[in-house]
Image 1: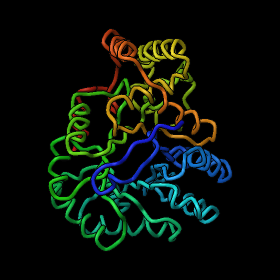
Image 2: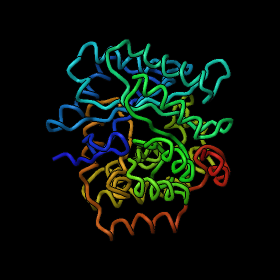
Image 3: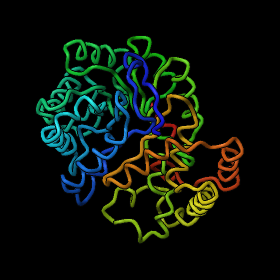
Image 4: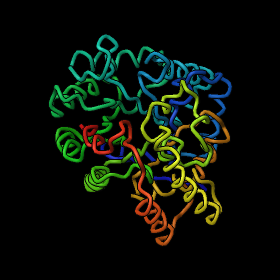
Length: 341
């Protein structure tokens, strides 16, 4: 039995699995996985769902080495080989990347170029269901950004509008211009800041779905990382604050506590974290990544794990007594507030 939910805004009639399948690890890694492996990982999730339930796939304009469209190109090949899966999946695409700067550029010109770049990479094999600027470009008002997205939507380039890494206040302003279908933010037991809670609350009030990416703390909470050497030097996590040597050993104590709680629950540490994120709201959808069939199915099963109030209190106690060291990106956790657009 796969737990399901619905999305929000103009996609409120779309029934999906509670857990989203993130595709970044298929191509935005030092050694991209073979098509056969990636395709099997995607198909496994879709095939496990009952009729009428869609699998949300999360991709981006820049999920390739060198910030390329490799991830979308992989999806194009997938849908070319399995065209019947186009209607069984709901495709989220983050964009607004400007390769000339490089960085996020939400000017009307670059938003149009970004959308067209994504459409071109998909080669007509699948329409973009929801398009989201990957970050809020503070050079433009959110109202103007959304107005541009509405123009592109009305031209038929995609069906729904989403946001990513925005504050609760920005979400409210954006939604006042046009209904937002889903907002993507980082949520895990080690990434649950005050602004995160405010975004979740605002989304619930406005009937907007929330995609909680990195629910496993970017792999920190899975129990698979035991020491700094377990992280490939080319892995982007090698440069993140929480995985630096001076912070990692402290943070692994949190991972050990999560692993212990999962063992008592009879699930994997990853499933416990996915269940915890999903417990934050009916339309809060955990967004773990997977490049393997087995992991896709394990993640989906995490959406079916129900945590008791006592178990949720245990997670809270772990974090209160042993707070994470290091910010989401920089050494100083206080800088996390600067990430919210």
